[in-house]
Image (cartoon, rainbow, N blue to C red):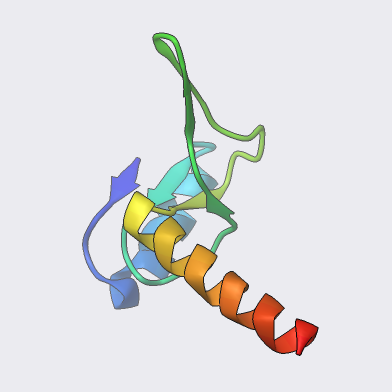
Length: 78
């Protein structure tokens, strides 16, 4: 189930969906579950075996994370 509502409602949506044994993909800023970056292999998609709440990291989010990591590494090296 994809939830693109709002962070405040997502916690309840997550309880309902994961309680039914389904996977929740969080498209809100709630950040309840682990961050994942889905990998596309041919015609199939891969998601972790964890059948709970997944927070999708977009390419924009990944770019920001890489910049933050680079700055932290520069500080540590200095």
